[in-house]
Each structure stands twice: as structure tokens, then as C-alpha cells.
Image 1 (cartoon, rainbow, N blue to C red):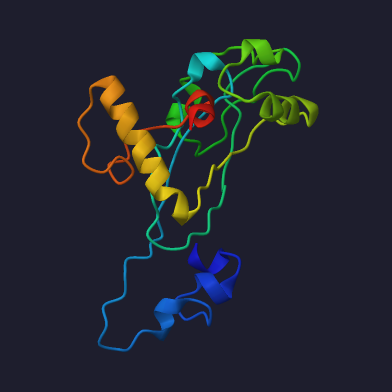
Image 2 (image 1 turned 180 degrees about the horizontal axis):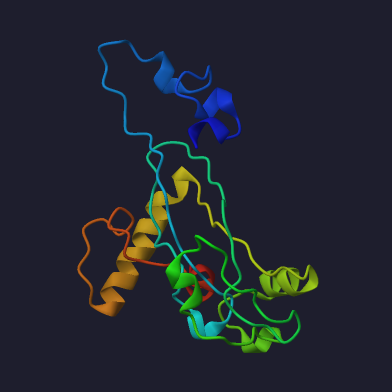
Length: 174
């Protein structure tokens, strides 16, 4: 897998732009992975929390790859989802068959812009990453502490604890 990654100058252990390749021999390099997130998801409101990754912080640069996607819902506009392929994850077929929303008003998870882009491009599957700048961490932390107080949760570090998922509503509040 590591050899198949793009940007070898960054992603290869000895890549010239990979700063860990510049560490002295006696230094213990940080754990750079690979790290894998496996998730399933849907854009319809009924599956609001399926396949989401909680807000977290990568301690180093990261290369994110979407390596496999398989539709798991049937959509009246697109047709039936294909039968599972050999080797597909078992959870990919356990989700209830349901229709995707036909208008923005039916979908409270997506912003209008996201919904129009998805429906206008006939997108069936994919991934969306919301990436925040390092300098946004103090504001994110304050916001998440406020959410914790509102919900009665006790948190030490709301980002490192990885307990919050920022849906469209929370991103708007932020």
C-alpha cells in the first residue's frame, strides 16, 4: 500500500520532503502510520451518524485517500444498488434500503450548496473532508467546550478526545 501512495517525496519514508527522513539516526521518529479509517455513510437524514468520523487532530501532515466506495442505498433516480462484490465489508449490505432526498428541504445534514453539487453532478458515492487550519484550534476548542457544557458532557480536550461530530448545523453555529 505504501508504495502505491502518490507524492512519493512526501509519503515515502525516505522522501526528500518527508521531514522524518532528515532526523538524526539516534532520534525516535513519530508514528506516521499508515492509519486507516473505515466507514460507511449516506447523505440522507435518517442515516445522520452512519459513517462519520468525529472531529480529531492529526499531529502531522496527512495524505487522505478514498480507496473503496460501494453504494449501499437504492435511489429512485439512480436505480438499484448493485449486489455486494466479493470481499466487500459485511456491514455494507446491512443498511436499510432507502431513497435519497429529492430536495434540499428534505435534507438537513447538507448545506444547500453541498446538496445542489451532489444532485447536479449525479454523484452516487464519495467522501467529504472538512479540514480546519491549525490556527483555528483555539476557536474550535472553545466552541466544543461550549457544546460539552450544553450537553452535560465532561471533556478534557474536546478535539483530542474525538467525541464530537460537526454536522451541517454545528458547522453553521461555529
